Length: 104
Image (cartoon, rainbow, N blue to C red; front, side):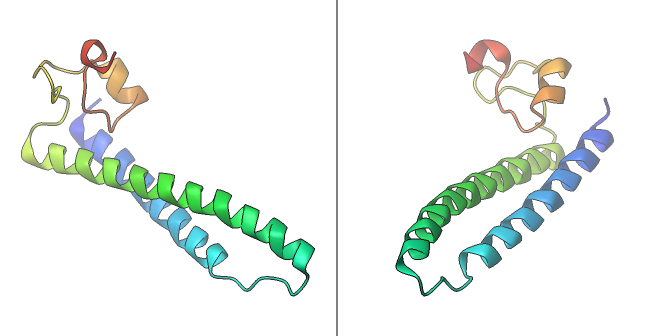
C-alpha cells in the first residue's frame, strides 16, 4: 500500500469524522422537551452523545497526526523503538504510532 493510498484513506476518514462531529454538535445544541420525564431521558442521551463527540474528536486528532507523519516522512515508524510498523498493522490501524511489540 502506497503512502498516497494511505493519505487518501486517512483524508476520507478525516472528512467523515468531521461531518460526524458537526452532526453531534447540532444534536447536542437542540432544545429539550418541556416534559420532565422526557428531559431526564434527553439528558442521559446527551451524555452518550457527548462521549461519542469526545471519541470522534480524539479520532480526528489521531488522523491529523498520521497525516502529519506522512508529510514529514516518519509515517510507519514506531515512535517508541523506531522500527518499521508492519503493513498489516498499518492497514488495520492506519493512525497507529507503535509497532505491535511496543503496543503490547
